Every structure is written in structure tokens, then in C-alpha cells.
Length: 422
Ligand code: KIV
Ligand code: ZN
Image 1 (cartoon, rainbow, N blue to C red):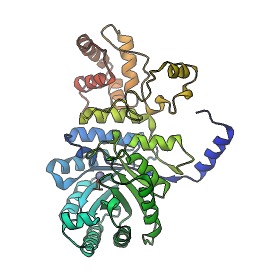
Image 2: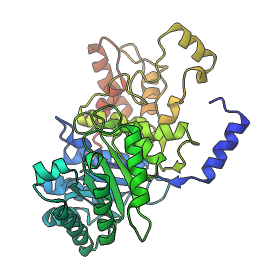
Image 3: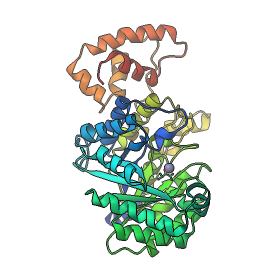
């Protein structure tokens, strides 16, 4: 960016006042609730490893009571990814989190699943909006408080010290009642209060005001982290999340590519890059390694089969494509004329090489090296250099059958099919 000295000074001053922002990734839980998406245990493990390299602080690995498969996935992530610290800026492993309804059997199952992780969190939730209390749960507000408190106490009694509570449908709940419920669960031992706009109903002003109101009014005798959890039904999930940060939230719940129930959850890459491009607006810092964003996005696309729309912010195929003559001319003169982010800092390979049936080994190898930088594929190929030849032969076959050239997606599929990594 073309910053003046004064803008740089302001950025330094803001950096001095920055507070940590916890990045809570729920790609494997709320993300997997996307219609039509089912991930196998080994796919979940692979995504969890990438989330760890990405620098995610808390990984919501699943909802163990939902099925045997979910339990196994959470347990294996806790055991195999939970201890990993490689490539992480903090040197600390991810906290592995499991979701549970405010029911003892769910909470026990969740705790059993996360037990192998060095750092673990139980996330329990109960709806608080009148519409959910009346029609779904058929309980009174008093019963709601009792259940919420009992759930948090039960989690504590198991020995869990990191407990998150979510008042489901907070976005449509009565604020005074939310203060009552949340103050009660804090007293019972909750350490993070997550405020879901479950149905994606709020506007940024409303959501930001709600977070501010709760930060100011919930009674707590110790520091509590307030968290955002937004859905994208009105296309406002990222804006609402950012409004939450501006109003005191210090955790954001996000998914890679914004996948999730219905229109999806807040997209991790959008929030991270909004903070990155506006350091003076958001007085927070996070541990995400932006160079891992593109790879995480591609991996989630391949494993879930959920294609990203070409014009998707940050990671869409057109996010850095310039079509009009005026824009192309500007970018050629100086990239900052029409690019607010350098695609390289997302770990995106340059678009200089187009691979097709006429491409040779050198171009192929260069492209492979670009797209696998800092990934498990790179470590594997370093150990098995003959892999390039195996891949090249497969690439040639594929290129023959492709009219429009071979994409990075195709190359990743080749890597998955021809290297025995997982
Ligand atoms: O959207 C929601 O309310 C949720 C909760 C379980 C946190 O995903
Ligand atoms: Zn949700």
C-alpha cells in the first residue's frame, strides 16, 4: 500500500494498543454441517493439520455425540493433531474443542473425545430466544437458566477448565435475559461467552451493539472472552463479525471459505485480511500465517467438494484477476492502483505459467513447487524426489484430455491420487 509516514506512525501506535484475537475455527463442525458435505476421518485429520499450520488457536473438531464417526474424528484429531506445534508462531498447540448440547451425556461424550489433546475445550450451547424456548425446547426462561448453569457445572466437574457457552439464537434473544443467562454461566465456570447470530438475522449495527451491551453488563469476577459467531443468510457475516470486534469481542468463530449451514458462516480469510488491511481500525492481533490461507482454502474445497464462487473475496479465482483495459494498465504500472492485497501473502502461486499438454518437465516442476510450498506435500517430495516423474507422467495423460489447460485444483488432485501421503 502507498502509505505516508503519518499513516505508518498511526499503525505503530495502534499496534502498541493491540489485544489478542482468538481465531476459533469451526470448519470441521459448523462447516461440515453444510448441505451435502460429509468428511471422512482421514479428510478431517488432514484439514485439522492444515488448520494447525495456519495458526488457528481453537479448532472445533466436531460434535462427538452426533455419531461414532464424529467421536472418532474428534478423538483422533485430539491425539494426532492436538500436540502439534510445527510452523506455529505461538509455539503452542491448538486447543481442541468439541460441541455438546447442554445435556450431561453430550458433555461427557465431548470430554472423552478431546481428552487426548494437551489443550482442550468443551463448547456447550442452549437456545435463549423466546421462539426457540417456546417452540423447540418447550421450557421457560427460568428452566433455561437452570439447564445452562447445570451444563457448565457438569463440564467443570469433569475437570474441564476451558468452557465455552453459547446462547443459541442470541441474535433474536431478549438482551436483558441474555445478561441473566450469561452472568449465571460465568458464575458456574464458563470462560468464553460466544454470541451466535444463529439464523444470520442481525445487521452490523445491531450485532455490534449487542456485543457492547453484553461486554458492559454481564457480571463477571474475572476476565471473560466474548466471541462472535455469525451466519451469512443476509450476506452480513463478515461485517457483523468485524462489528463484534470493534465492540469488544476477542474471539471470532469462522470457517475456511465461509462454508457452513445454509448460506454459511463467517469466512476466516475475509476477517483476517480485513484486519490485516485496516490495522488501525481493529486494535487486535492474531496468529494466522496468511501464507497458509490459499492452501487451506484449496484443501477445504477439494475435500468438501464445495466449489468457491469465482468472485469470492480473497480466495476466489477472480479475486486478483483484472479484465478491463484500464485496470490492467494500472496494475502493470503499479500493483497498488487496483490491488489492496498482494496475492503472494496468501500463499497464492503466481499466475505466470499456464500448464497444458505442451508443457515440459521444468514448467511442471516449477508449478508443483509453487503450489506445495510449506505443505505436507513439500516435505513428502523432499524425501521422495522420484515423485516428480510419477506426477509428470500422470500430468501428461491428464493434459491430453483437458481442453482448457490443467488447473491448480487438477494438480492437487494428482498429488492426492499419486502420492501415498495420507
Ligand atoms: O449457529 C449456532 O448457533 C451454532 C451454535 C451451536 C454455536 O452453531
Ligand atoms: Zn453456527
